[in-house]
Length: 325
Length: 276
Image (cartoon, rainbow over all chains, first blue to last red; front, side, top):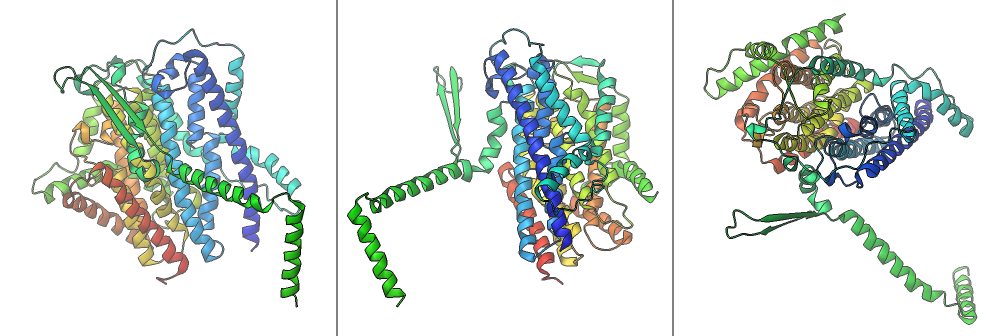
């Protein structure tokens, strides 16, 4: 099956593109989290908000990182995820039946994982970076110094690889050829960059920004009630339905404590805590703990006494004599 | 050439499709209902109004209407020509990612307005989107497998459930009410008015029309079958809307699991070749 083999070589190139992409956007998000921590003294989404407007430089750059992590065009996160999904969809129609069925299941899991990752990064972007500040006042201004250059370069890399994905294919294919010398890669393979689907949305966004920029601004409506900072949706609330749907995996526990003041309908204060348990992690941990205990028991065999080892050797000899007769 | 024509027709008749669905739904509940051209009138009304933008926000809510409209027009372009309609692998995925882009920008814009209703709608939209992602991609990916009538019907049925979610229809969401606590898609648009709202409303009409055509293209057969299938879906959807009450929020995921099972079954049947 030459087609499968050659697409395997291409997957090697795609895999490396994915590695490069993850390296770029994860570094960007780490650096961005650093500049948030420097200014706000916290990286807890609960206390953030309004970062996009406050940090005029690193805010939008962080937004690019979030978009790459959500695999949205025209970022490199999109092109690499696009390539991975393409490989799986192609695997549906090539190869032995069992492999194709596995590809279908894997595709379903991959898509759901991508959807859940999207929730997480929408939460970071929409609640952490946008809206209004939830916690105390920020300290100082953003340092517009050279430290931002790193974030800016990473963001630029994300966009360049996203828009001109084929440019990266040649250097990466060269590495593949160095590792797998027998590979025959047709370097003319990549067609129109998939990020072309972002052309109209980006254009539309710019047009609507230009058109709406000077329109009359009115306070947020929300059915006529004034919007206070504290009434904003929080990350806990945003993620709550997800925790409920996946309750068998995370066992969410809600706890609302009201401090009453005469009437129970007008509590003085309210404390809301939600905890989740990572059931899969817990299961794995108890499994490893069981393995550890078993290993400890097994150490009895290795007593460290010479006569015991001699005894093992004799038993082995008897066994060999018995079975090899 | 035919493709360009198809895109233009799709963009032109998308509001009419919404009008037909609304009229059918009204007839099914024994009301005379609005005329079929009502969506065009709604758009004209909105376009003649003043555009208001939410204060104290970043530029994201200003970008959102354009990005959402641009991504739905891209979606309409990605729908393959109905005459020889087979989706390519890249258009299968491009469709999924285009939908994701339009949704992302609406959700973050909604969160930026700080309205609690918009936040709630955004949270629910993302929850449903994460669960419909798998059946959506799988249903579209069935176009890469051999044509098998039974398998195709299963995939189309699964895709129909996705359409109900994506177009905010009855068992999942309710288009008719503007009651904030129940809204999902509409809830995110609460802070828009005038031309930006017209753009977002038109975008949702186009998305609906494009999804209908895509569902029809999952079935084997030529242009005639596909056109017939679009009409059939346009009849089935209001019937479904009138036959079910809105599901409780946390029961909706069951519906998406059903869609996932349908699409997986469709793929399995075609790979193993039971139906052939």
